[in-house]
Length: 168
Image (cartoon, helix red, strand yellow):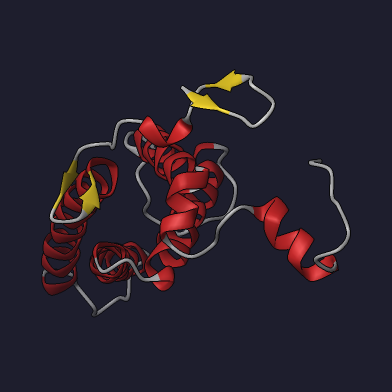
């Protein structure tokens, strides 16, 4: 309890418990990076495997999926490392790749033009996973960790420090 000058008491928020960490990172970031690294390695391995055993004599449509799988895996690995390092580029890249997966897999499920060869079976799970990743990364305390801060306070700073803003 904190006692104010007027005699009233209030609960102090500074006594909040600190979330568990691992090597200076929240458990959420640690878990996300570990899962992203696993997903990246799996996609690089199978993307390279598919690409190596592809029959290029007739240049089938499945080459697009082979390249997509390989590039996706590499991007996930790069952005996972950047997330671990606390870089804003890791946050932006992970959100961008997740949004792309949601779009590409949604188009595949709807039988609309997308990357040829994306299988429909895992598309629903990939969309769900990407939504969870984005949902975690856009939380205020995670955005603050990657130097985005509170969007309302950022707007107040750009409008001038003397003006008050109300949350939208």
